[in-house]
Length: 293
Image (cartoon, rainbow, N blue to C red):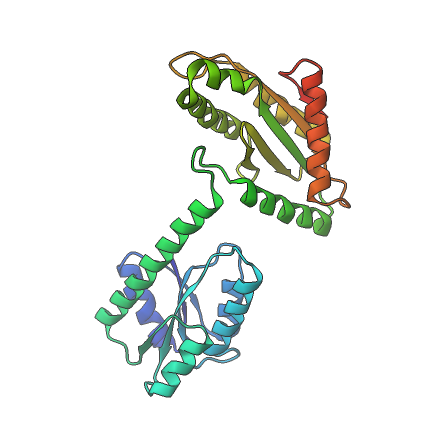
């Protein structure tokens, strides 16, 4: 786990870094408050931070306040567990630090054993939060993002597409005649088909593409930086990967239809979903097992 150590005293910063690395943590250091705040705003910021109270620029309580405001604005963002490091051991100062948003505190000069235990508590809490967040965002059957989470990611990518003036395409995939699978082979076999379909979709996507379970036997694929022409090629690769071999021990032969649309940088989420759904309807109307645009 990554841990941020924000401490302006060189000796103390070195000691903290050395101890945490000895205990197996990946340590990132900051020598002042502004540097620490910059690190905490990065996309893959540490989820555990040891922050000194008194630093140049921003002090520890200021960082905590700004961090909690940022987390409140990003409703589903990860939570950063903050341990305040301070020489102020009076009750009112400790309460002030906790009120600012710190989760725990350690008084200086710190005891190594106490530091190890308090950081360990923070790690357990962060790990639990991450597990809860995963279950809140992911479909339990396929392990993909669930409907709410994939819509949030789509909205995020649409905003980035507008901001950076870059292409974005969306595809909806529907497993053809899926009801017949459930009726003929049972719902357990149907579940196996959906899990395998999710894997076959992911096999053909880039690491920064996003896929989620849209509902039932439908999947939503978000392709950042991809215009319609390339999106159609990706969709066709996905289709071929699904139809190429049978599913499961019962050797169920299946196909899929896909509808693809490119974002126009004006419309909202509902409009791009409607456009993709319309393209999917065209593919089905033409006989299924194909890609529509």
